Every structure is written in structure tokens, then in C-alpha cells.
Length: 141
Image 1 (cartoon, rainbow, N blue to C red):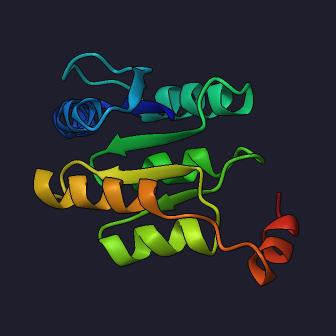
Image 2 (image 1 turned 135 degrees about the vertical axis):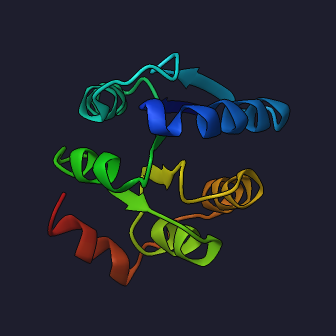
Image 3 (image 1 turned 180 degrees about the vertical axis):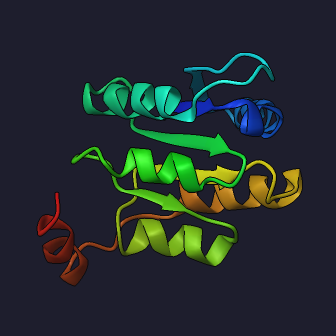
């Protein structure tokens, strides 16, 4: 699976940790930036990742800013994106099973690395349940 990942300065440290974790698990991860802790504007990286998903460059993506809120707001402006802001694993699993989320948003200043890795792995392992959930998603996608 090819995964895109992006962050602003507030999510940079957690992004590096998640990339290392995913690489160790055998995932192909493409970092769309930011590439330092220098202050940047999160919409630039959210848009870059979401456009790449729309173009078919990635199957899914992960966006990380200080809280995850800004990234999720920008990502969900894209019609083909279903971004879920998750602070725990149950919500991450349900975002895939019921909402077929294709972008996971995390808060780099809200989560420790171990919990973030668990959320990411749970999210990646969950499958869309389809059925009654498909008709609901079709209403906004």
C-alpha cells in the first residue's frame, strides 16, 4: 500500500516517528512535506496530499498538525476526501469501517508516539464495511 503523509511544523516530529514505524512495517510512504520544524502554513501540505490522492498517487494519507483540527478542516474541503481526526483507536477503526476514511488526521501536540502508532495501525488494518454505510457516503461524495 502506498501512503502519503504530510505535516506542518507542529506535526513534524510525530510525522518522522510515524514514517519510521510504517517503513518498518513494510509500507511505502511518501512524504509530501514539511521537511523541517520551521513554521509553515498547514493548508499547503493538506492540499498537496489531498490532490495527490485525487490523482491516484496514494491509496490513502495521513496529515499531522499541532492538533489535527486544521488539517482535517482543509482536507475535508476536497470532495473526494473523507478525513477523520482521531485521538484514539476505536474512532480510527470506525472511521474506516463506517465512513471509509481515506485520510487520517492526527495531532502532533495531542498524542504520544506510541498511541499515535497504535491509531495508525488500527486505521490501516480496518476495512470498509459497505452495506448501509455506502449509501450514506454516496450522499456527500
